Length: 145
Image (tube, rainbow, N blue to C red; front, side, top):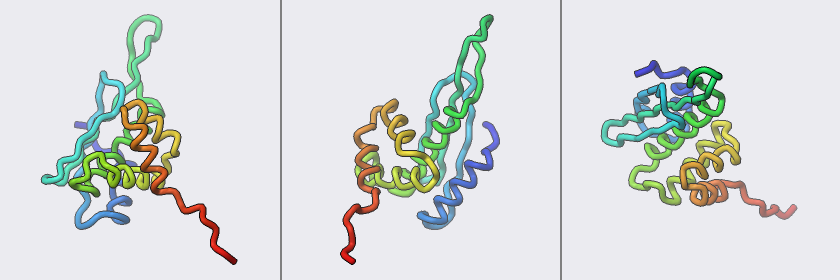
Protein backbone atom coordinates (compact mmCIF):
# COMPACT_ATOMS: atom_id res chain seq x y z
CA UNK A 1 0.00 0.00 0.00
CA UNK A 2 1.36 3.41 -0.99
CA UNK A 3 1.01 6.51 1.17
CA UNK A 4 -2.06 8.56 0.27
CA UNK A 5 -0.98 11.61 -1.79
CA UNK A 6 -1.72 15.01 -0.26
CA UNK A 7 -3.93 16.01 -3.22
CA UNK A 8 -6.16 12.98 -2.51
CA UNK A 9 -6.50 13.96 1.15
CA UNK A 10 -7.20 17.58 0.18
CA UNK A 11 -9.98 16.63 -2.29
CA UNK A 12 -11.53 14.18 0.17
CA UNK A 13 -11.56 16.75 2.99
CA UNK A 14 -12.94 19.48 0.69
CA UNK A 15 -15.72 17.28 -0.69
CA UNK A 16 -16.67 16.04 2.75
CA UNK A 17 -16.68 19.54 4.24
CA UNK A 18 -19.05 20.71 1.50
CA UNK A 19 -21.32 17.67 1.16
CA UNK A 20 -20.65 15.07 3.82
CA UNK A 21 -21.87 14.26 7.24
CA UNK A 22 -19.56 13.37 10.11
CA UNK A 23 -16.02 12.19 9.59
CA UNK A 24 -14.79 11.74 6.00
CA UNK A 25 -14.15 8.19 4.83
CA UNK A 26 -10.67 6.76 5.10
CA UNK A 27 -9.04 6.62 1.65
CA UNK A 28 -6.70 3.70 1.03
CA UNK A 29 -4.37 4.50 -1.87
CA UNK A 30 -2.68 1.87 -3.97
CA UNK A 31 -0.45 2.14 -7.01
CA UNK A 32 -0.44 -0.62 -9.58
CA UNK A 33 2.87 -1.53 -11.16
CA UNK A 34 1.30 -3.25 -14.15
CA UNK A 35 -2.30 -2.26 -14.82
CA UNK A 36 -3.60 0.52 -17.04
CA UNK A 37 -6.51 2.53 -15.68
CA UNK A 38 -7.51 3.34 -12.14
CA UNK A 39 -10.03 1.32 -10.18
CA UNK A 40 -11.80 1.83 -6.92
CA UNK A 41 -14.51 0.73 -4.55
CA UNK A 42 -16.43 2.22 -1.66
CA UNK A 43 -17.21 0.25 1.50
CA UNK A 44 -20.16 2.08 3.05
CA UNK A 45 -20.21 0.17 6.33
CA UNK A 46 -16.51 0.68 7.02
CA UNK A 47 -16.49 4.27 5.73
CA UNK A 48 -13.56 3.34 3.54
CA UNK A 49 -12.67 4.07 -0.08
CA UNK A 50 -9.96 2.16 -1.93
CA UNK A 51 -8.42 3.64 -5.10
CA UNK A 52 -5.75 1.93 -7.18
CA UNK A 53 -3.96 4.22 -9.61
CA UNK A 54 -2.96 2.61 -12.88
CA UNK A 55 0.18 3.22 -14.89
CA UNK A 56 1.09 3.62 -18.54
CA UNK A 57 3.12 0.82 -20.10
CA UNK A 58 5.40 1.68 -23.01
CA UNK A 59 8.15 0.13 -25.09
CA UNK A 60 11.49 1.92 -24.79
CA UNK A 61 13.11 0.04 -27.66
CA UNK A 62 14.48 -2.76 -25.53
CA UNK A 63 11.85 -3.61 -22.92
CA UNK A 64 8.43 -2.69 -21.54
CA UNK A 65 8.59 0.12 -18.99
CA UNK A 66 5.95 1.78 -16.83
CA UNK A 67 5.45 5.40 -15.90
CA UNK A 68 2.77 7.55 -14.29
CA UNK A 69 1.44 10.17 -16.70
CA UNK A 70 -0.86 13.18 -16.26
CA UNK A 71 -3.61 11.05 -17.81
CA UNK A 72 -3.06 8.37 -15.12
CA UNK A 73 -3.39 10.99 -12.37
CA UNK A 74 -6.56 12.44 -13.98
CA UNK A 75 -8.01 8.93 -14.25
CA UNK A 76 -7.29 8.35 -10.54
CA UNK A 77 -8.81 11.73 -9.62
CA UNK A 78 -12.04 10.96 -11.48
CA UNK A 79 -12.09 7.49 -9.88
CA UNK A 80 -11.69 9.07 -6.43
CA UNK A 81 -14.56 11.47 -7.14
CA UNK A 82 -16.64 8.53 -8.40
CA UNK A 83 -16.10 6.68 -5.13
CA UNK A 84 -16.80 9.81 -3.07
CA UNK A 85 -20.08 10.16 -4.99
CA UNK A 86 -20.92 6.60 -3.91
CA UNK A 87 -20.17 7.49 -0.28
CA UNK A 88 -22.40 10.58 -0.50
CA UNK A 89 -25.30 8.80 -2.21
CA UNK A 90 -25.73 5.46 -0.43
CA UNK A 91 -28.45 3.25 -1.93
CA UNK A 92 -28.15 5.10 -5.29
CA UNK A 93 -25.72 2.77 -7.03
CA UNK A 94 -25.17 4.17 -10.53
CA UNK A 95 -28.60 5.78 -10.82
CA UNK A 96 -29.48 9.37 -11.80
CA UNK A 97 -28.92 10.68 -8.25
CA UNK A 98 -25.44 9.13 -8.17
CA UNK A 99 -24.39 10.51 -11.59
CA UNK A 100 -25.71 13.96 -10.73
CA UNK A 101 -23.55 13.93 -7.57
CA UNK A 102 -20.52 12.66 -9.50
CA UNK A 103 -20.89 15.38 -12.15
CA UNK A 104 -21.21 18.03 -9.45
CA UNK A 105 -18.08 16.76 -7.64
CA UNK A 106 -16.12 16.70 -10.92
CA UNK A 107 -17.18 20.25 -11.76
CA UNK A 108 -16.36 21.52 -8.25
CA UNK A 109 -12.92 19.90 -8.34
CA UNK A 110 -11.71 21.17 -11.70
CA UNK A 111 -12.44 18.17 -13.90
CA UNK A 112 -13.67 19.31 -17.30
CA UNK A 113 -16.88 17.94 -18.74
CA UNK A 114 -15.02 16.45 -21.73
CA UNK A 115 -12.54 14.69 -19.42
CA UNK A 116 -15.36 13.21 -17.35
CA UNK A 117 -17.30 12.08 -20.43
CA UNK A 118 -14.17 10.52 -21.99
CA UNK A 119 -13.62 8.65 -18.72
CA UNK A 120 -17.25 7.53 -18.79
CA UNK A 121 -16.99 6.44 -22.40
CA UNK A 122 -14.00 4.25 -21.65
CA UNK A 123 -15.88 2.67 -18.71
CA UNK A 124 -19.24 2.18 -20.42
CA UNK A 125 -21.28 4.84 -18.63
CA UNK A 126 -21.03 7.77 -21.04
CA UNK A 127 -24.79 8.32 -21.42
CA UNK A 128 -25.45 8.26 -17.67
CA UNK A 129 -22.55 10.62 -17.00
CA UNK A 130 -23.74 12.98 -19.73
CA UNK A 131 -27.19 13.05 -18.12
CA UNK A 132 -25.56 13.83 -14.76
CA UNK A 133 -23.74 16.79 -16.29
CA UNK A 134 -26.94 18.06 -17.92
CA UNK A 135 -28.82 17.77 -14.62
CA UNK A 136 -26.24 19.93 -12.84
CA UNK A 137 -26.01 22.69 -15.45
CA UNK A 138 -27.21 26.13 -14.33
CA UNK A 139 -30.58 27.09 -15.78
CA UNK A 140 -30.39 29.09 -19.02
CA UNK A 141 -33.75 30.72 -18.33
CA UNK A 142 -33.36 34.47 -18.33
CA UNK A 143 -34.74 36.41 -15.38
CA UNK A 144 -37.00 39.28 -16.50
CA UNK A 145 -35.50 42.69 -15.79
